[in-house]
Image 1: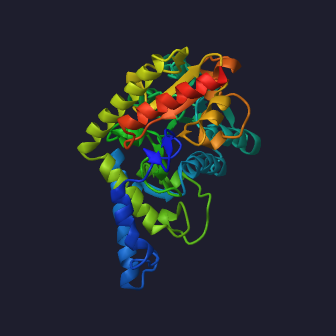
Image 2: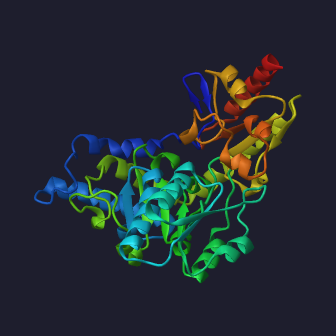
Length: 389
């Protein structure tokens, strides 16, 4: 995919929006503009029905019902609502469960929430290690669980190295202990079929702009019988089962629903397969350059189909990216931590040195990345390395 003259390989930061999504949300900015919570007239009913349909579509993506979907502004808010909402209600009810477990490669917002839970609510938050591929050890997880654990938060697909966790077996271990399982699944819709996720999780976060829908919209799946255990973070008119007050943005909800339906369709399997083939071609072409490179994280077959996190030995990633501007867009890690000079916490967690982490670039291809884009990107990278050598 080219944006102007730039080859865009940063889809894990933000995906391009499906054309069908753009077509279907348009009317909700104009002729169907009524507030979905205006219950006294027909136009309000139409908007309300559109939001309800979108919730059903998002629920369908993960095997949940529409009334188990709470729309938010994105996965960061969803993660906050899940963990802070659960913890706040637990404190109100004087629960004795005061431990929360997260993995060491969670999104920065989850790790930040953990600090707030410790500092402001008196929880003990434990960070669980991963192996060099970014995988959770089921035996380690089982060994640290106990009756005093309120919740465990483990992401489905890592946003930097693309690691895909064994959610089904992780769920079995967590649920056997009586803890609640929260999963940040923002990167999962592009990576895999998610039909069993509602069956295996209690709380699950999604983000529209990671799944070819607009920015500014996300969702939190809350298992129906768990909804009374979530204390709202936003209070007001009691919308969305009283869990997240405020006017739901109808066009954005519609867009996320349409994207969810596409990613839950039979064609999605082929789309993911083709994406993986193009990513593999990109990595193969990079490996044939004169410059030594290596892959961070799991083997290609066991990661997000568009992800390639590459070490360029002897170089500094920021220098490479600077030389590549404005011709190629990639990143050194999560867009949510761009501008932070310290090495990626994800790369450090899988055992990389500071030098290796600082030499690593995340390339993330999308459904609309073409073979021509790949060829051009490899040529640009080769030229940049020649300039820096």
